[in-house]
Structures are given as C-alpha cells and as structure tokens.
Image (cartoon, rainbow, N blue to C red; front, top):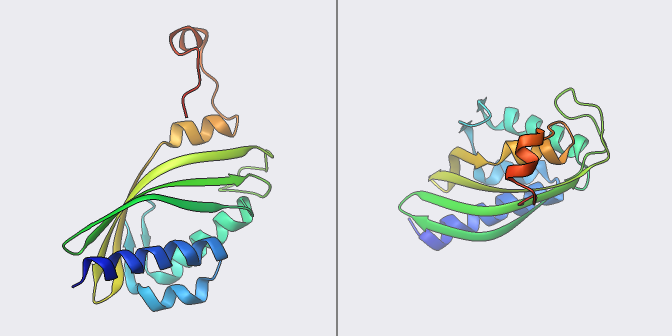
Length: 147
C-alpha cells in the first residue's frame, strides 16, 4: 500500500464531491462503505447523502487544508463553504453562508474507501445558519465570534 496512492484516492473523493460527480465515486468508494458519523451504510446511501447536501447547499465546496497518511488511514483537515439556499435535513433555506472546518479519517482497503469518521464543529454550523443564539452570559464571555 502506497501512502501517496491513498492520499490520491482521498483527493479524488473531494474532487468528485465538489464536482457533484457521483458516478466517479464508484471507482474508489467500497460498495459496503461505512460512514460512522452519519450512520450511513453502503455506497448508494452515501451518494444520497451527498445529493442532499448539494440540494441544501448548491454551491457547497470542500477545500483540503492538510492531508496525512499512515498505514491504511488518511486524515484530512478541510473547510466546507456554501450557501443554504435549499432544504437541508427538513430545514427550510435560510440564505445564510456557512464556513465549517472538519477533520475526517478514512480507512482504505484494496484502493477503495471502506470507512470514514468525522469530527466537525456542528455548534458553529448551526450558529452560522442562525439556529442557535448565544445567551447574554455567553455574549459577555465570548464577545468575538471565533470561526
């Protein structure tokens, strides 16, 4: 297994998502893929999830900031941007722009992504959509919004 090859697979993953090219995911996502964070099982369920993101945030874009590989795992630090102009998870469009930073860990088996784990700042995501407002005490403790 080549660490550079594994990183290349993940870069192609991000390119496909940015282009909304779901067909190319078949090349490097295992049929029995598991997304532990979003509780998705299988390549087709994952494609449905990506489609839903694209409907909620048509200008959705991921930018890789750093990528590290070791063994059969690849860690990616990246940023998502987009504008909430369509329904997302039952939430009516807010028109708000979002910018969220995440870390994902991918496990590669036979040149395909078999598993994924994600750590994201969902509180900040919902705050940017205007769904969460800080209390008066919170405004005093954290006067500047850190993103």
